[in-house]
Each structure stands twice: as C-alpha cells, then as structure tokens.
Image 1 (cartoon, rainbow, N blue to C red):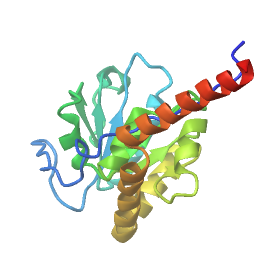
Image 2 (cartoon, rainbow, N blue to C red):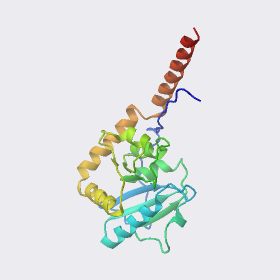
Image 3 (cartoon, helix red, strand yellow):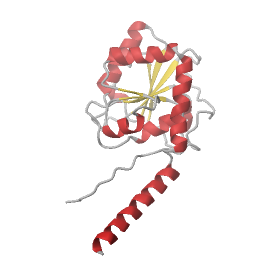
Image 4 (cartoon, helix red, strand yellow):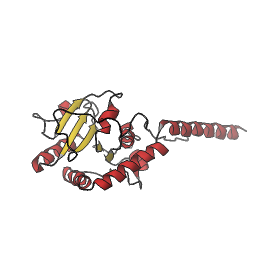
Length: 217
C-alpha cells in the first residue's frame, strides 16, 4: 500500500578503500605484475552467488594456463571441488577492516549472480570501484543504474568462455585497465560515497515531508 518508493544506492568510503594502500603478499601466490588478480566475495549461505560459473572459470584458466588468479573471500571453501583448482586461492572470511588491503591488491572484482539481481546495488560493487578494481557483473537493476554508460565495468550474462575472454582482453590492455579503474574511483569520490548518499537521503526525506504537508493543506 505504499504509494511512493525510492531506492537509494549503496556506496563506499574512499578514504578506507584506496588503490594506493600497501599491497598484500600472498605466500602461495606468484607475485608478479603479469598476474591478473581477481577478487570474488561470496558466501555459501547465499545461493544467488554464481559459484558454478566461478568454478568453471577456474577450470578454464587452469586448462589454458592463463596468468589469472581468483581470490575467493568469504565462506566459499565448500563451493569449490576438491582438490581446489590451481588458479584459486581461498582466503576464507576477511574482516571488513582488513578488506581494503586485499582489494587494493586486486585488478578485477566479480559481482556474479545466477539470477537477475534487482535487489539493489551490492556493497562490494562500490568497494571494488573505490579500490581501483574493475567490476565484472551480472545484470541487475541497481547494478545497471550505477554502471550504465560510465565505462567503469562490464555487465552481461556470462559463460565461463565469455568471462575468460573479457579477462584476457583486460589483461592485454593495461592502459584500458588504468582508465576504467580511475573512472570507477572517480565515480565513488563524486557520487557513491557515504557522505553524498547521506545528503541525498536527507533531501529525499525532506521532499517527502514537504509533499505530505502540501497534500494535507
């Protein structure tokens, strides 16, 4: 029975999530600028995360011996087969306080769902952008509202092959990576930070109160 509903986007803290933070060193990972580091934040409990696609992507990376590494964060261990694909590092749950350094060490962030996600804009999308990670996403209303026409990320329904092709393209075009990463952070600095969103929310509430008052009069 609500006559008017307004969706306000999530955001990030660009002072907390920054690409210039000291990079993490992962002992089991070959540390070289030639490796494309891919973040995937997910949870076994949340069935809409497209774990099947990520597992298929990992197998493809291994088969083609590509210089890509998937960093799985969150409760994801049981989403992968045993043995774990060679291209995957499972970090387990990562504290939100520690997450900025992890993301500062990544090049790409996956926002992948097995349904059309119209539930809003995922928080990790903006933390990726603030950290200089290029978001690769499944379609969804909130996600498309944020990324449409910005040149910041890639949004479509993916297969393991098409996703692998997109990652290969980015890996071969470091200048394009730099431009997309810079645009993503700029978008957070200008629009999708908590201060700007608080101001936006405050104005929406004031407009609703004024509209109600006018109707009563």
